Amino acid sequence: MNSRQIIVVGGGAAGFFAAIAAAEQGASVTLLEKSARFLDKVRISGGGRCNVTHACFEPREFTTRYPRGERTLRGPFQQFSARDTVDWFAGRGVELKTEKDGRMFPVTDSSQTIVDCLFNAAEKARVNLRLNCTVESAAKLADGRFELESSGSGMGVSRGKIQADKLLLATGGCRAAAAGHLAVSLGHQLVAPVPSLFTFQIEAPWLRSLAGVSLESAEVAIPVAKLRERGPLLVTHWGLSGPAILKMSAWGARDLHGLDYKFPLLVNWLPDFSSEKIAAEFQRRRETVGAKLVVNVPLAPLTARLWEQLVLAAGLAPDTRWSKMSRPQAHALTQQLTRSEFMVTGKSLNKDEFVTCGGVNLSEVSFKTMESKVCPGLFFAGELLDIDGITGGFNFQAAWTTGFIAGNAMVA
Image 1 (spheres, rainbow, N blue to C red):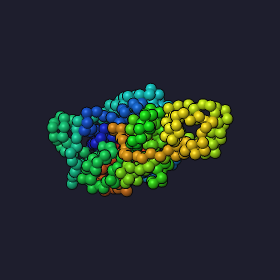
Image 2 (image 1 turned 30 degrees about the vertical axis):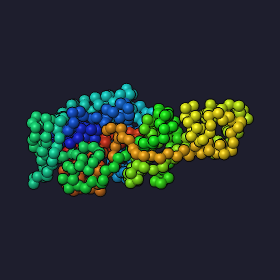
Image 3 (image 1 turned 180 degrees about the vertical axis):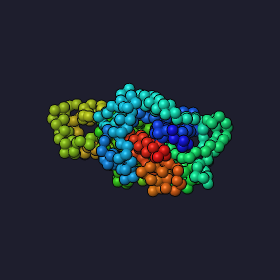
Image 4 (image 1 turned 45 degrees about the vertical axis):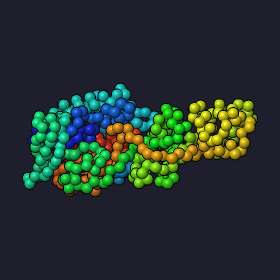
C-alpha cells in the first residue's frame, strides 16, 4: 500500500481517470467535485451516448485533430492512445463500437454505461469521492506538501483545510479566467480562454424556417479568416450547426473571437457538383421535365424543402418552369447552390458539452508526467490545459490520456 496522499480537484473525465489510475497503484486518493454530481460532461456528450474516443489508432495522426496541443500530445499518445482507451474499457466489461465517421460509443448507446464503469472502477480502487466541495485556495507548504481550503458540505464541514502530498487540478475549461485561479495562485500563467466548438447564429428567416434539415456533406468557408471545412451540416432554429461548423469553429476559435463572431459565411450545398455539372443537369431538365416547376424538382441529395428555399433565395419566381429558366436565372441559382452567403451574427453554446481553448500554458507542464515545471508536486489533466480538439471524441481522449499519465506519475 502506497502511503502517498493525493487530492484530485475536479470530478470530470480527466479527474476521475487520474484518481482511478493513482488509486489502482495503491495511493490514498480523494477526489473533490464542487457540484452535486460527478461526470456531467460524460453524461450529456454525444446526445447522451458518450463519444468516448475516435477510431484512429496511429498516435501521430490522432494529434492532427487538435487545433491547440497537436505537437505537445505526440508523446502522451504514445503512452496512452485511443487503442489503450478501448482496451481499458473492454477490460472492465464495456465494449465500444465504431460508427462510419470514426466516432466510438459504448455498444449500449448510453453514457450511463461509461459513468457506471468509472464509478465501479473508482469504488474498487477505493477512491474517496466528495461532492459539493469547492476548493477556495491552494498553497504550497514549506515541507513540499499542499494545503487546500475548501467550502461546502463535501468534507462534512462548511469550511476546512486539507493537506496532500500531491495535487492534481482537473477543473475543466476556463470559461472565464477566474476558473483557473488555483493554477495561477500556484505560479502558473493562463492563455486567455475563448470558446471553441460552437454553432453559428444566422438571422436569415428562410434558413431558420428549415430547422431540422441536415446534409451528409456540405462545404462551409469563412474567407476573411481563411477557414474552410467539409462535412455534415445541420440547420437549426438559430442558424447552422453540425460537424462541419463545429470543426471550423475549433480551428478558428481565436480568429472568430477576434471578429466578435460577426463575419460572412459561404455555404456550398453541393460540394460534389462542379458548375459545369450543374449546368449540364439544368439543361437535361429543360429537355426532359421542361413543363415542371423548378421548385418542384430538386437536385439530389438536397431535400425538397431546402431546394425550394434555395430556388426562391436565388430570386426565381415560384411559377418558373425549367423550360423558361433564363441564363441569368440559371447563373443565380448555381451561385445560390454553391456559394450561399450568410452573415453570422453570433455564436451559440450547448451548455456544458462544448469546450474552450485556452488554459494553463503548455510550456509550463512536463507532458511525460503532466507535472508542473513551476510547482513540483502539482499536476494537470484535461481541459484546464490549453488543449482542445475538434468534435468526434478527441477531447475525451485528451482527458483519458492526460489523466492516466498524471495519475500514474503521482504515485511513481
